[in-house]
Length: 224
Image (cartoon, rainbow, N blue to C red; front, top):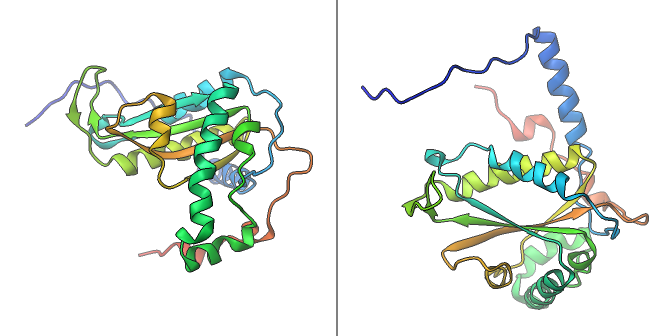
């Protein structure tokens, strides 16, 4: 039987079941306040906040613990401007009919358009890449497993950490996104998964009422 090297489990703090319920409920209630922000202020966000969020993302579970992700952290005005130009070019195709009537109809209540000024205004853009090959060591070129799933979990932890720090976020997924490899100087075998704008909301920022709707528990969960 395989007997890998291991260290003792690090115990959680002593809690009663009531403590656990209270902590889970408080965390849930806080996360329910997170919404996508589409109007940012240019107020700086410390690099240390972004670094902490990326470290949290890097602790996510992943297939074979290969950690198949790379986070390109963009703050230079030149790089943000280049990303906006390329993203808006793809978005104009999408909103011009490339997205199809059903998809365009689904997002119509959000009021989004091809214009994405927040890509330049938000102090940070976090470009998340999935790595098809890698492994636990920097020089590994092994196949990675469950890349999309692993990166998705990591991004959820990233968003939750930024929310805890009082930093607003928006997940943006222009399609196609290969221009991000060029701008972020990433190899072609890495796949851009998402682009996250992060910063402080502008004073006139709003939340579309459509985005306030959340399915109730009985629609998103079943108990067997």
